[in-house]
Image 1 (spheres, each protein chain N blue to C red):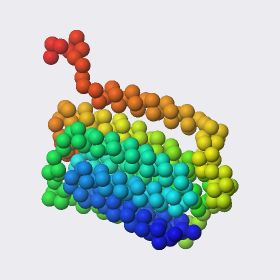
Image 2 (image 1 turned 90 degrees about the vertical axis):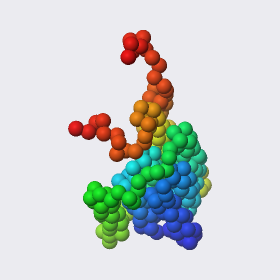
Image 3 (image 1 turned 120 degrees about the vertical axis):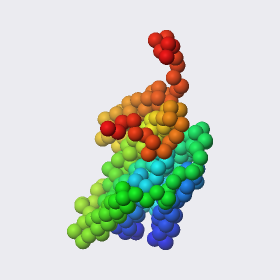
Length: 177
Length: 100
């Protein structure tokens, strides 16, 4: 089981490095799909089959297909200058990313970082009651307010995307321009 | 039993790669993908903590992070379509209209 975790983790990191280093945006998107599928495997190993399913359905399925559609629609050329232009800002940026990595790893692996008291959902209870049932029950009881706010957020996003992305229709007041 | 620390280190690595992508890449869509990668890294940390703590709170956070990521992708890509229509490029070095 640990071996599979390392396999999926290595695949996820490789895909992420592909997003960082590949030049063509289409290859970047496909690399990110690989990362998200590998993370789905990691979630299954962590006893969260429901999260793994929505990870693959929504992230790898829906969101990345949206990215690919936009890339195809815009017909981007892959002549991005990546390594050619090193400036001090980029060096500082890489240094900052490394500092963030060092700090996160340092905090996560430090001896004082211990987990708090265990909650009431061990793996046996999740396996017995079903992850979907537990998540659904919590969504309409304890987390009902965030759930409703999320629905409003989704509706705002749909309307906003339609308004922003549609072509400008010439209004009568703008016809003189 | 997978050590929670290893899951968290995976999350930190993915997050750092996402940060470097946002800083280094000049293509706006790839920058956007790096932001999605960072959101995914946070999801990994949430699921890792939920696994280690026998809790479902992290899973609920993952669901709401997913909602925010989906809305962000939809609105962001719509903005990119509009920008590409106006400027003809997605190189973020050339978006300096708001720079003072």
